[in-house]
Amino acid sequence: MVKRDITLRLPKKLLVILGILLLLVLLSFLIPSPSLQQELTVSPANYSVSLVSAQQAYDVIIDEGGYSFVEDAVTSVYAYNEQIPGPLLRGMVGETITVQVQNNLDEPTTIHWHGLILDNVQDGVPQVTQDPILPGESFTYEVELRNPGLYWYHSHVEAHKQVESGLYGPLLITEDDEEDSGTILMIDDVLLGDDDEFRSFDLGVMHGRFGNYLLVNGEQHPTIHMESNRLRLVNPANARSFTLSFGVPFTVIGMDIGLSEEYTETLLTIHPGERYDIFLDAEEGDELALQYVTGRGNYPLATLFVGETVARPSHSFALPFSPEELLEKEPDLTADLAGFMGGHRGFTWAINRKYYPETTEIFTVQKGELTKMRITNTQGQPHPMHLHGQRFIVLARNGELAEHFGWKDTVMVGNRETVDIVFIPEEQGDWVFHCHILEHAEAGMLSVVRVE
Ligand code: C2O
Ligand code: CU
Image (cartoon, rainbow, N blue to C red; front, side, top):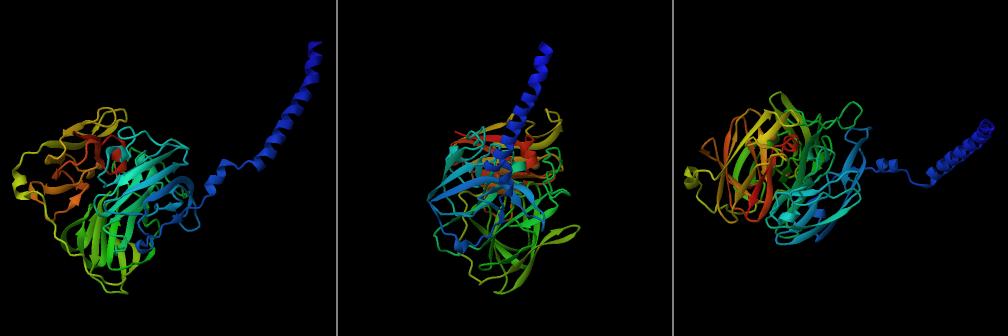
């Protein structure tokens, strides 16, 4: 009896299953499939500062999409407002802008305002200053614009992956809305595989992730029509330092934060995280080759057409202390940079042999008190070190007074080099101090400067 029952029921079950399958197939035509997201096309950025005016509020929407780094190929990327790099955010000194961030990714993220001195809770560091913005959630940043200059913003969650994938953009702060501000160049590289997708995001790479495609504002050797003879450069690359030639000499007028001492050069080296503000010694209409200069030859980065030549803003740079006197001062803090075998990854990058997040080094300093920090690289791998929420002066390298002064937030500490920096903490809170080779930071080379 039982057997007969079963044989009778089976075809009915099959019918029910077939029915459900048919329904699912029909439904799939009605419900947008999640893979549609992949079809969102991300475009390269076009920064014409003169076309973007200062605003008080911005929306930044983060999506996955497809982007062509290489002609006829599409790479899966992450993007701010469907463009790579992200939109130019612009505001005026003394204002606070509101940036509402919507995270449409399947993973958490945050935005860090690289170089800005602001309220600690707006700094965008997961677990240190805020909870990450979860998938589908939004967060509103109140971003205070204290000092003029070109800054940049980027993800601080798995930064080695998210920044490489497209989550970075420029932020310009000027004294007034109309002033000529130069042309922004974000000089980057990406590492793509034969399938044109990002190669795996490996933290084990000793020197950090070096790309196989060189990009200026998200494109391979673009032609850029400059607004004047002024350029503002950013290096958002995970690990690569760029030495640049413009084919003509240039005058540096600003470093990371605002205007600096002026000096003239023919080559410019820009490390990950850094910015420079320069005036080219060129005439309107000149066609210049921007090249990446290496020991093994030069690589073309972009063709530049110089705009109207303008006078450099007249300014004088004054320090609030005497560098000569400070050269003798004992350091208040010391940070030894090294990698060692150990920790759960097998190889760990560390500051004072402590590594984030397990054994994080915490330096304690007082707001308003001049602080001298000695950073010593005990090995051969260079580390561009970035301090959040402060501006510092690079005082000396290997005990020799620095050649040119300016306010900075990122400093390269080269092969077995000792660098002294000086800063006066302006805001209380926990500010991270880390290597801007993003693979090093994510593999432990991150500490906290606690301002009391
Ligand atoms: Cu641009 Cu904590 O980094
Ligand atoms: Cu490093």
